[in-house]
Amino acid sequence: MTTSIEPFDVVDLIRVKRSSGTLSTAQIDWLIDAYTRGYVADEQMSALTMAIFLNGMQRSEIRDLTLAMIASGETMSFDGLGRTTVDKHSTGGVGDKITLPLAPLVASFGVAVPQLSGRGLGHTGGTLDKLESIPGWQASLTNERMREILADEGAVICAAGTGLAPADAKLYALRDITGTVEAIPLIASSIMSKKIAEGTAALVLDVKFGSGAFIQDFTRAQELAHTMVDLGTDAGVRTSALLTDMSVPLGKTIGNALEVRESLETLSGGGPADIRELTVALAREMLAAAGQPDADVEAALDDGRAMDSWNRMIRAQGGDPEAPLPVAPHTHVVTAAESGYLIEQEALPFGIAAWRLGAGRARKQDPVMATAGIELHAKPGDQVTAGQPLFTLHSEDESRFGRALEAVEGAWSIGGTAPAPRSLVVERIS
Ligand code: URA
Picture 1 (spheres, rainbow, N blue to C red):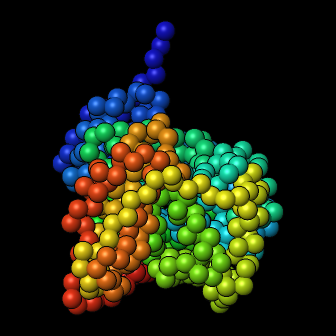
Picture 2 (cartoon, protein in one colour):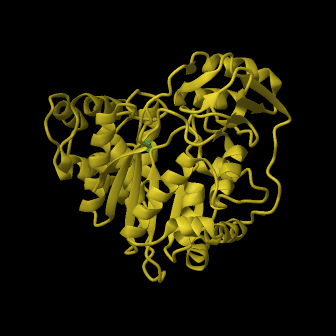
Picture 3 (spheres, protein in one colour):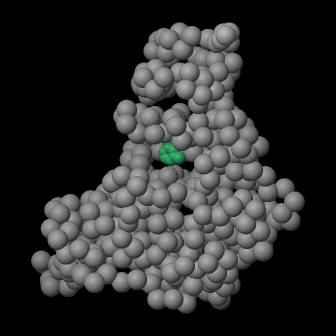
């Protein structure tokens, strides 16, 4: 029996990155292929990802890594659909339900919005988990059905199949257990390999910073946004990014069915001001990328076009948009101890509390509670009076309230002076 000779030795590649050197295209192509087929061991890849975490990567290496991960699986194409495709990706945050009103809103302008989404892990909720609180709604679609819905309705939000960038799935699972998730070259190549493989013509990124974001530091979030915009542009995908503040929860609900309810309010022309602002900002960005820079997106929210588009999108995936959303059997209200202005409302502790109430999962295989979460009755800057409800916890299991309350201890404050207003969209990068 003959065994084929491998062109590189992975230990040499680890040494290159350990001493801040640059890997060639051929080395990266081989590395990703050899790791996917199991020739490069997890221990070796762990050492390499840690060296990358500590020493970074050159732009050429990040591009090569992204392309190698794309080449590890299938690629999709929306050519022949008869509509321009624009996708949005958010790096995730607390109460971030923007995909729900955004996809049907943009689709109401005749653009196709393929949203291949995931489930939540940890304190940030997953779009599919939210939509699954709608009776009958199905996340899994074949590629053919997804195309059909896109062609007919313009928007589809479904589970990303395992065929896109499988090398990334393997590498991401390894990063998750080796403390190397937060390396910017690895995050950027991971996100962009899936988006480029999906075949969208344009992409708008919502890159978050602040306590509820995955990358909390503003400068690092900026670097991530620039890296992803460069990768998209190099791959021929029109890509831009908005840097948005995630220090306070987005909107007034955190948790699956509660967030769907708030999305419906937004699609009816109402909803919290921050949800409307970000939905409108991202819709304008997406429509500009699709050649409609002057689209009046606010009118589409106010006159029912976006809601019609939502109803069609939900029905196409088996959901009943008229069915009542599930409601938690148990609630616990927290009231203001004094009168004044709500000064602080930190995103991360509220995200953790919603997770502890059952809205999120600790392990991939865990189920989520559709009804669990938090309803915020006031947002920073609002005036509150002593005894007024500040927020309500929702769960199917009353015994979870104690641990959720522990998570938010000290996470909000009331004072005599209104806090300075914060901008939600801080920078645009293209
Ligand atoms: N999301 C991804 O898909 N990949 C990362 O590395 C981080 C967030």
